[in-house]
Amino acid sequence: MHELIDLLEEDPGKIEDLIDSLYDSIEKTDGEVQAYLETADKEPLLAEAREKAERPLKGVPGTIKDNIQTLGFKTTCASRFLEDYDSVYDATVIKLLNEAGSPVLGKVNMDEFAMGSSTENSYFQTTRNPNDLTRVPGGSSGGSAAAVAADEAIYALGSDTGGSVRHPAAFCGVVGLKPTYGLVSRYGLTAFASSLDQIGPITKDVYDAALLLNVIAEQDEMDSTSAANPAVDYSDGIDRGVEGLKVGFPEEYFGDELDERIQDKAERWKETFEDIGAEIVDISLPHTEYAIATYYLISSSEASANLARFDGVRYTSRADTESIDELFSKSRDEGFGAEVKRRILLGTYALSAGYYDEYYGKAQKARRLIKGDFDDAFAEIDLIAAPTSPTPAFKIGEKIEDPLEMYLSDVFIVPINLAGIPAMSIPAGEVQGLPVGMQLMGESLSEELILRAGYAFENAFTG
Ligand code: GLN
Image (tube, rainbow, N blue to C red; front, top):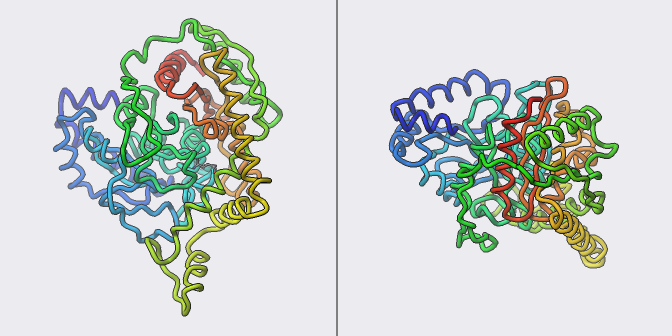
């Protein structure tokens, strides 16, 4: 995107070629990749882009996950329940992107209500990994990552509750940044687990992620958890390098579940960091083994409360019934898919009287210990590096019948959301033609450092 912005700065007339080429590539590729659920009409989009030519993003359009309210488009959350739901306002991130000069090209596929790690839980279609069409793009922002990787988008927004920006970015070979909890407004993002949800950019390179964070990181009175913007320019000084930084590699992220080929790649990551002047430190995050259970209890509990609003009366499609009780239950039965129902049942159970302390209460305590691991680590080091996912992209259909296997794909990404800290997945090699992602994690509000280290790594790493 940044090269395009420079180009358009010199010759604003080039916007027409850019938009033509995006529609051409969607036309040519999306039949196979199936990332888009909806695209803007071309002529009005071009007119809008031209109008915005003077603004910082120069009319370069963005692609948006379908759980973010965007006027002029539906917001289906890839659910049958919201099949006909038109957005009623612009999410704060959309408002900010428009103000900065980036209109919306289209809305993309996801796991239903952002629950999943493969984008197979969409009611509408299964998005495919552009690197190998027999494989999943990861999830839940699979449409966002696949669109960017397939050149069907310049950049995309996703949401990350338990890895959903970083996981598909790793599987598709692009960059995905989950900001510190609260740095980016959640206003207009359909709530999944409100204490974990965060919107983040998916881009072709680290510099683009910095440019987008400059636009979307802004305190918002419409989101009571939004944090004061540290008034940082994330792209300025991104090339300052990592000389003298301490990068920790946590032993718990290099255990048996990690694909050996990724284990080998990680040796190259260490060498690269050393080449550019960073120091490698072995560290431990001892409560990592509790992260999956903790995350699935907390996120499902919050989801069971958040999804109560979808009832067949407001927003959603309504089942044809005789009684009011039946209206709720039949609408929810028909509207939600299997994975969403599984989460609602799990969460309702974990919150129910008699089980609350044993499950939800315990999970909250474990969450504090996991956060404590990171606090202890960051007292000694500057950044943590680890694989984003234990395996490269798996086959479509491989894990969909086994929810636990699917959940285990998130083992290295959910601790970050539980701790509320920022992390970015960047392309870091390939195994048998499939991209591998490396995740950089930092303490709260350390995006500037993460982006700087990511930028240095990206320039130095040779595969
Ligand atoms: N795989 C995680 C889940 O299914 C990711 C969720 C997310 O980040 N939206 O809950």
